[in-house]
Image (tube, rainbow, N blue to C red; front, side, top):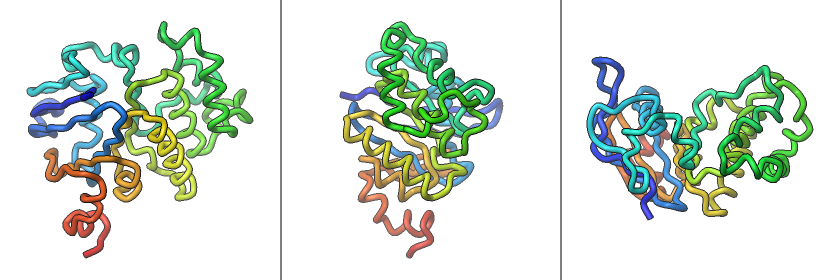
Length: 237
């Protein structure tokens, strides 16, 4: 079943147009990646979905609902969890308190202890540091915390903006191993990423974004073997 669909979406900041007639969709249980260079408009796509940015034209549907017409704060209750670039954790709060903030909806609040146990089982380092201020965690641990906080929402769709940004390669591998486990569990994931290989390894399908336009859309294995994509993003002819 189609859960999220962007149709001919145009968006920007003031008079600056950034997205031009974007068509994308995500089905239930699917992992979809959007790849592209800096300035391609990847984060802007996510801001339109999360409601941070109003679209200028087009439509965004969440199942049968007009998502673009709804206030941004409704997304969490509808089952959309967005982990922004930079992770967005509250550094002065403890690891535990950050996780608690993820389970504030009526649906998840009664399950808070159960959900937190799952997060700690998945990321044991967070259990070890559960009472420490989040700002004392390493970059990789903060990314784990951001993912854990999102999972406290029991989201239907998990949206990640550049999860590998600023992380050491060994930590990137760990983060993507966890995302792959979520995929195996049937979780729907929408991932924005500059690391084309990592993103397309985990994704079922992908979109290549360039200067605000979708220039390619296909199955991941097709995109990663496309000569033009390989030359532009991997430096391989």
